[in-house]
Length: 299
Length: 287
Image (cartoon, rainbow over all chains, first blue to last red):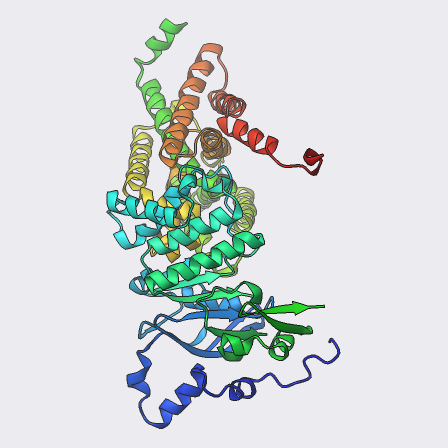
């Protein structure tokens, strides 16, 4: 353990208790329960987790995670490697078995999501590898996002193809349309997968470290795209990342995870404090402001 | 020699063999697309050994070996999907375990069996000229069913082959499509055992798809090239075996390999790969 780090209690009560005025879910929910309004107010959350726990191979990957995300909010799920960020996203995406309660769009869900619910959730995976010889073009991969919504016996028509091309133009990758997906650069491929997810016309967008392994310029371009999509389409976005210096401008709330537990849930500017981040990453970190934006630095 | 070849087609066993050969090439090469793109080459040999084990067990229990082999093949397909999904093992590892298990079961049965083992062993070698009309009818039904399945669910199949996870995330019934493909693999393998046998079917389940992989980025063309090369290998192999009096199974496999070799040599993808490699920036280039 590094000197001067992690000697402080990181429990949720402690950290959230230090955040007066934030709309952190656990505090608000407690207050609502006291006034007997719990049921009627619940519907304002499009994503709601209560005591979600995931155990795998004798290890507990998530421990009683509880939080809610209102419609149209952009939330960062942030933490070091192995914190449980991807597991949490997998629970919401319907890829992971869990104990506890998950409600999406006001409906209680099992780990295998209802098909209608699933159609409302767009998903962009991390470090998605494609065999360069695999027979799928970038344009076809984007159009494929509409397949679930169309149903079993309908094929994508002119409308879907035009929309796919519009999305590729918006992502500034229309020139890649006729190239095999496996031949695209990492950034182009991630943009194609983002376009595929938007093609699904989702209400919620789940992004699992979408800029992992990309260079800084491409990361910045990708995050700007996310902000653009957020402002244009008003989606609810959950973004998993461990890079505080590359957060989209639209991101206002941060849920910090470590060892499968929520250790902070609140305003992202408050999360960006050297003290909290040092505890989170178990490494001495400092923050500084530049051009009105906060950055993280380390020795 | 060519005249003799046409004369031979007047005989019903040769006619059945020719029809079965085309159906075998078509069904195996359609399936080959899934085998190659899902990277599961062991599935053919595992399924054929499941059928072999089933046939041996059928003989022990005095059931029709072809029927028990078919049932065992479908059971193996039914176990493979859920087992790889629930145990977090890769399908290839599950196939490896299943393959060795079925060999063990088959050899155990052969050891116990006191009667002739020819019926069971025929499933490993196949016998084109001794096919019954019923064998060809079953093969035709399975081939048509597979073709119908591919045509009906083409867009879903494309997404499942690309990524089961993304297919699931898109609201496609990926698990159902994947399991259906596994069942169809079991059905195709077991219905082809009488034709080419369990050992040679491995080549027909890999080579046509591998040939198409060298030539196209379009999945529709991929299916067409795979079927053309599979049927081409079967027909040309049969003709060559007749003309030069060679074993038909070996001739079919060698023709499939020659077709793959030609596709590899003339592959436009290799040219594209070289171009990409050639355009790589090196630090020395800046000097």
